[in-house]
Image (tube, rainbow over all chains, first blue to last red; front, top):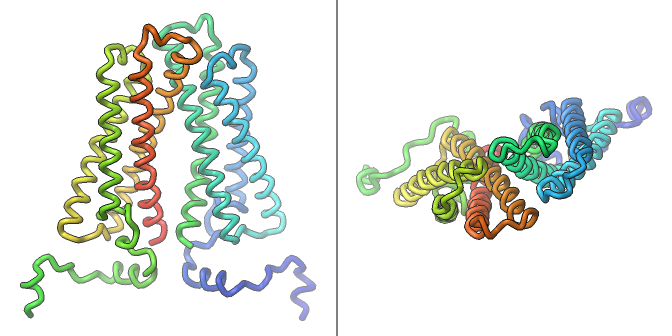
Length: 180
Length: 180
């Protein structure tokens, strides 16, 4: 009877469904792989996503003429969303690390997976659209003297980096969801 | 002993690994879900991908000034690759339907999944870059009188449609791979 009082944050007893799942696929435990939600790797990935998206947002917003191009406005919106999403999940990861619990709930896992899929697709599409326009201005029109080419390029590159950091999170979440 | 002569295309006896896999996850059989490689749904998806990519390629290549814009050249390259990939897998699907066999091999499945991932990402990025430039020309610069705006828009829209048809194939392949 001493167990529960010594470890007050003991995991609740598993339900029948969770128990069956855990027995069926013991290899794909959520705690095994770094980068999953609730692990240190997952927190590092979220932090990278947030940092790159924030740099991209700041650099793009610092140019005076970004609202004249639709793709740049879209990039600002997409990386803002990525910032908010990554920050929320980084906080959730910190909480999970502090209480030493993974996210074992299947609904939470599918919510994270769908959210990751939407935000990373938006970030990637915005980065591609901006890259198309940046290359058009810089290489095809040779018009960098009138435009903030280097800032546009930096913002685009940071949005791509944010997407690179978001992809592992999405793939790991989706893999976990599928292997249940 | 009459069995093999009556059905000459009988499936070979399963190896130990395949047998273990089939026993472990009986719910996720490849034959269950339409849209998998080797099913009629999969063939329809491949045909749609091929048709949309081919229309996009033809419309973009019919404009005289697409080589002046890097993003449009990239679109032509990406949808050409999508055409070739989708056509190859459509032929493989037809073969699989004719001999009434699914692709049960794990290596083939992972090859299809990786190839789908690469081609659909390329098509999507090219479509996004073209969309950025098309919107720039049409909405931001209002310069449609000098450019083939409608053809650029059609090619971009068809590339997006090709990506929409490619996504289910990729997700189903990846899901199959993960659930093994």
